[in-house]
Length: 434
Image (cartoon, rainbow, N blue to C red; front, side, top):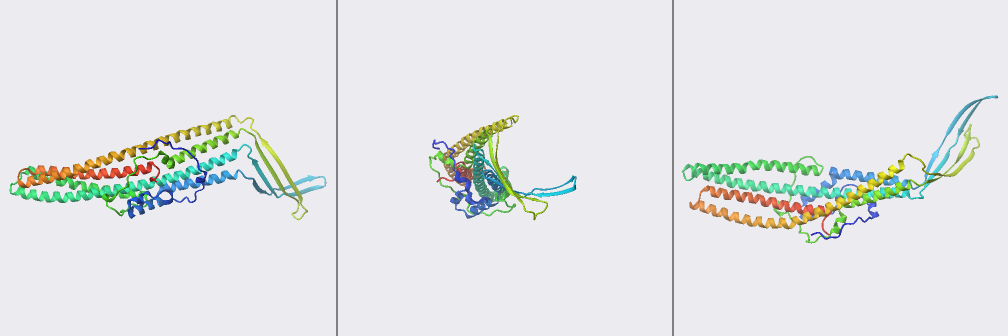
């Protein structure tokens, strides 16, 4: 059950200064290590280092970091070197006059951020950087969870293939026995054809399962940024397990979900952008200064020292509604971000509740499935004993074998679903339980 404390959108400006953008295990807590499978650990580490989606998230983070640097630069003065050169020839009463003027100077300018417009734009860029960092962490969590799910699915397919091969051996032995008994007339041709059909039924599943295993290996290779190849195995499927979570999970854990953090930072960024657009209606005040020397006709001429200092104010009077439109755009983007945040929170609550509900139901289903498996195993033994004693036909034993084979496959499916549900809970909570 999820505790009823709603996730907040608290901001932590320190998150905008995280170091290192290369995808890796530092982006997400290594929750998969509880399996105790070194092969799985290596697969996830490789996925976190080479997955294309994670590399793309890292590139977006670098873009956001560069955008923040560019925005911060607007808060400081600019200093430029200018070297204007002018050559003229004029006709005067005394004849032709040539003039060459060079005026190298240093020019500085600075916009006084009286209303905080540049400061708000910088704050918006910093918050978008934090959103990009959360996006990268979310990509890392998604990649790790998908890799573990794919590995679990691969081991489940291995278990199903091993079960089919073992069943095929028993079906082959039963078919050989049926053929011997049919030759001496102990069983009918109908019973023989039933044994042949059961053998073929199991045999045809093996190529299908082998193909599914190969495709699953290719999917794992894609996740790890590798070419298609055989994947190593570690633990057997029945050795995989995850610790059970507590019955009560505080909803405050949802605050660490990367997608919620991202949405919260985007919402705060749009608020800052809206404030900057509102400040654009107010006058902009700038200071400027320059200092240099004036050279006339020859560089060795004693230059004239020149300088200037001034201030300017620019107030919008008429712009055909451009500033108003920009403000309306920022307001609409703020509303979109608010709706996105609300949707992310509701989705997260739903995903956690669904995963928690699945824990009890799947545990109950697994318990009944094991009980049914025990009953079917005894039923097969009874059918076999009755067949050998001559009290029942071979079809009764075949039916019991078919039921037990189907139940064993069902147990593998339930165990796989239970593991995937635990992984889904970890993903829904944004990481493992503390």
